[in-house]
Length: 98
Image (cartoon, rainbow, N blue to C red; front, side):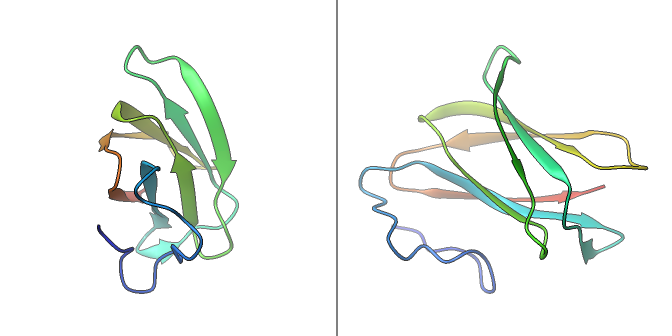
């Protein structure tokens, strides 16, 4: 069982025996970027979900195990894609710099 990164989102109430978690932070010039959007795309590139980042640039998805792509979007920035693998019982931590 993996915990979140120090200072990351709390995993209180998350049953990692049943969940695959993808979470992380979006940064611009090494500063957390609130109000950005992170899209979850499946292995074929199809849109699955989207969440806004928190004021501290953080986001979280509960995804089926498998290969995914995260796409970060923000004003005045090119979209940035990151490949990630979700696995039941694990937390995939992703840092995206725009």
